[in-house]
Each structure stands twice: as C-alpha cells, then as structure tokens.
Amino acid sequence: MPDGSQSLSRCYQNFCGIILITLSLLLPALLNGQAPPPPSGEKNGSSAPAVQPKSPPPKKQPQAKTQVEYDAYQKIEAATDPKQKMELVDKFVTEFPDSELKGVAYQQGLNGARQTNDYERALDYSRKTLQVYPDDVLSLLVLSSWIPERVTDNDSQRDAKLTEATSAAKKLLEVVPTLQKPATQTEEQWNTQVKELNGRSHAALGFIELLKKNYTGSEEEFEKAISQMPTEPTFYYRLGLAYTYEKKYDAAAWNLARSVALKGVSEKPAKDALEILFKAYGEDPVKAGEEDLIKLAGSQEKMPNDFSFVNFMESKLNPKPPSP
Image (cartoon, rainbow, N blue to C red):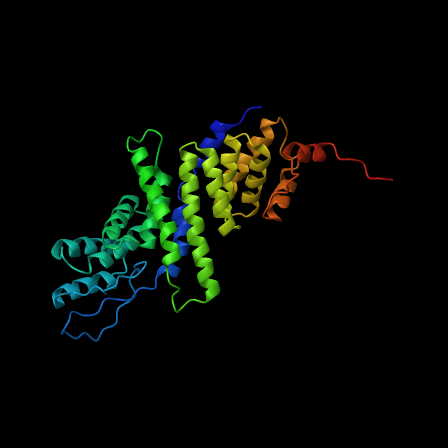
C-alpha cells in the first residue's frame, strides 16, 4: 500500500509555530528572578519588576557599577513595548559592554523577541544569554525548540543548526534536575513544571530526529515526551508521522487519532494525516470509522496491545450481527 509520505511531509512542514504558542504558556512559571540592586553605596527607593531567571541562579547577584548604568537598565525593565525593550537592550550592552547586568539584559531582550515572534533575534539573545548563564532554561528551550521549526532541507547550515538544537535540548535535560523549587510554587506545581520541561526537551529531540529521518530515534524521544506530558496533542501528531514513515500503521493511526481528540493546534494536520492513512487502504474515512477511532484514542492514553487498524476498519465496514 502507499505510505502517503509526500502528503504527510506537507502536513508537518506547514506545522511551524506550535512551540511559539506553547512556549508562552511556560514563561510565567520561569519568572522567578529578582531585579538587580542599585549600585553599591547608592540608594534608590523605586522597586522594579522581576527579570528573567538564571537557572540555576548565579552565585553572585549582578550589580550596576554606577548610577548611570543602573538607570539605563531600569529603562529596559520599565519598557512595555517589546520592540523598544530590545532597542534599549542593544543600546545598553553597547554602552556598558563589561556590565554585570549584561546577562539579565539579554534575558530581557529574549523576552521581547519572544513576544514579537522575532526568530532571529530570539536565537541571538538566547546564545548571548548562555554565554553569561550557560544553564539558562528559557534560552535552552528556545534554541532546542525554535531552530528545528525553521530548518529546511535546502538550508546549507541545516546540519549545524540541528546539532545546535540537539545540544541545547540535551543540556536542558541535564539542567532540569539541578533546578530548585521556587518558594512561590507548591510541590504539585513544581513537579508539573519539571515534567513539562523534560517533556518539551524530549519532544524537541524527537522532532529533530524526525527531520533527520531517524524515525526509530524520533519514536523513542516522543514516547519519552508523552510519558511526561500525556495530554499534549502535538507530541502524538509528530509521533504518528514517525510511525507512518516506518510503516507502523497501527501505531500511526492510533497516535494521529489521539492528537485529533486532544484538540489544540495539531488537530487539523493530524486529522489530514489520519485521513491519508484511511485512503491509503482504499477506504472512506467516514464509513471506516474515523470518528469512532478518534473517540476511542481520546479515551485512553495507551494504545491497546491488540489494536489493529485493519481489524478496526473491518469491524466498522462489516459489523457482526448481534447474537440471537
């Protein structure tokens, strides 16, 4: 039977922007840093909003050397327009290249780039932040997640970019166990946050392996991601693609159906990919029980060991008469 790979390829190539949405949901839980103090020996009675965290936080809190430097940084924090914030960050690091606040300034710039979905500047601020704070969670998450979303097959830097994203994802998996629970979070909230960071790290690795056509490796990473976040529909969608390319159609159909059932931004491409599988067998999705499969997959996290896509369609197309 045909594998529908060209159509499925179009599905995931048009699937950019998922992480741009989900990443914004992560950000509030990462905002547990504190504003830097005024320069030593000088007083400033104003309070400033929290800045992006260092993960783990630096041993020595960064501090301005002069009041002029401190005031310049305060303008960055006070800026509400993300584009203006980035302009102020760039101006700050130019005027104060040796500032201890350079790292937190880059974190502010990353926040502005994230808000405006500015891909190139987000990557630039992430790399610069990591030069100061090598374990910065948000920077590692951006590099591991955003880079694969924009890589194309004809990109001359494709391999280098995927290598960078892979390194960031693996580094994040190393950093997560070292993080300390903020006092403002309950144990349950923190455990959920840790699982999400681990899940998105494995999902990033899974997508990278999918792009590299290492489908077995992709399946393994997405299974790990799902073990951490069993209700994230995008993971099931991309896992379904990996299984499809491997011609493991039972698992492919199940995971695509579950992605549809869980809704979210992957619902339509997952449904399109699922319909391709039905049609690859020569069956009408409606008559062969597509909606029933979606309901079934949505009702349980794990695919039953005896699930067969062919048998499922057969049961819908030729139902057994009721027993007398």
